[in-house]
Image (cartoon, rainbow, N blue to C red; front, side, top):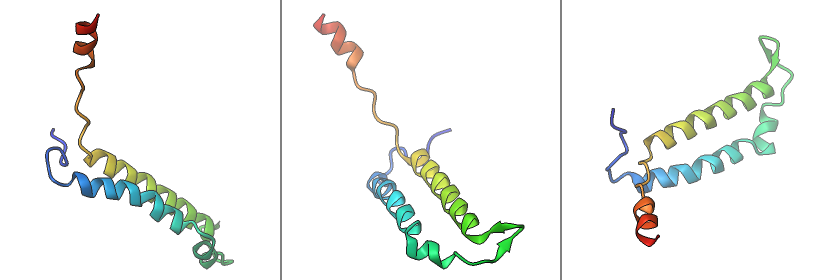
Length: 87
């Protein structure tokens, strides 16, 4: 099955997404946002703050997987041919 991003003009957009994903994750993990979820409430016995941290972590992993799956594979260089010609 062909990769969706291969050969398309979306390579630049995917590079920006790959850059912005960790920046977005870092912003979501800054103390002002974490403090917003620092409440005494619990969901299924788990503090809301812990659920928020794991939700952000899972979303970052899924986002990184999607971006890397959509990225086109780098072209294989002719390193084998070049090493054989030079030696």
